[in-house]
Image (cartoon, rainbow, N blue to C red; front, side, top):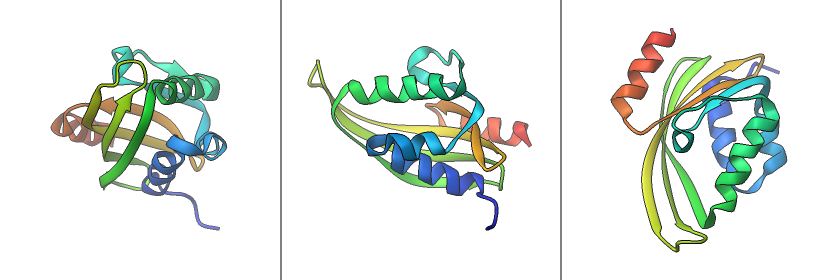
Length: 130
């Protein structure tokens, strides 16, 4: 079996995020570092940290969908542009945003995630990571 590329893993991560916690967990490297925008990019470490971010995110929504719009990069390092739309569970507020998520892979798993609100900033981080 050929190694999973960063694009393959980013796609699997996004699809599994919403309704497949075990499939999501399977995309994660044990040494993952995730810097979510909602925590002011404070790094979370390890699979359990990543699962806490995911579960907290999912608990915040009555309904949520994430649509992958674009993936650019190479086999180990990509930016995935994702449109996230949903309705807040407690507020009822409608949200429609684009995130540009920088992924790096190691050993066929996602080892780094950084969420950018700005596409150009995400692409610059991608270039610097090469």
